Image 1 (spheres, rainbow, N blue to C red):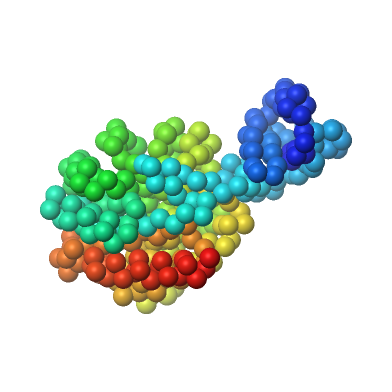
Image 2: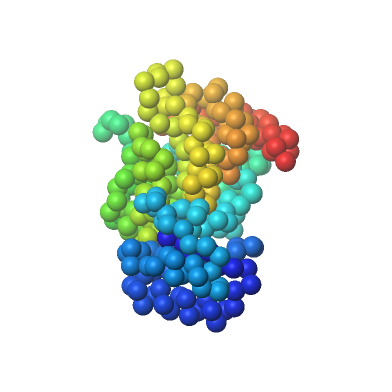
Length: 333
């Protein structure tokens, strides 16, 4: 349930209303926008007399919310959320590009790629230290050494770093990470999400391989219910019967999510397509449909990459994508 307050409501009236609702055992999430203030009520709202609340002088309207997610719901929080990622704002009309290799392989590799993507226009650096792989014999990442090398790349370039966590027991290693990524395979690892909900770091939550938008938002709700409301959604494609691409990039999720949630929305065309030559057109399409940014894999030598070289762009290819994306952004304005 949400209570929409009148624009001219007195603070004393608001405080009395909040005290009354709190005494009913409800938790109140207050959202103040430019034109209205909304009280989101979480708990057993069946005890609330909506007609009584509506009759109060300070109240504009009372509405019941049917969706099971509350904190992630735009009805609770009409204004777009902007997440501070190491000094880089994500959401709320900004457009950020996260770029870097699928996995950190060496100091020379990650620093070279970081410098190249920054020069091209990337605003955050991605790189995998822990890599979830289908095969147990595939390269699994450098783990702690990979995180150390990412930190070196950040020192060289100033780019905030984004990297994936695989297990809650690794959290202490992520002290210097600016944005913690939850990958598609862990989207419904609810125990991990609960732990991340108790942190104060931004969480980039990727959509699961075959999950609905509501399931995705419920995973975001797990994190937010724990107290961490700094959540960014990332569409990375879903598994369908189509085999021409690695996954099927669901760009319709962007306008759908715009209606349903206030959280920032990024698109990862690299994992969605799995084919480097398809990344550019999908990045352009993602920009045109209103995404808040992109996440793109870039490697200085894709043919010899230890992980996902087939979907990685070279630094020059990435620079061309950034140039075209900027043109689309200008046209969209």
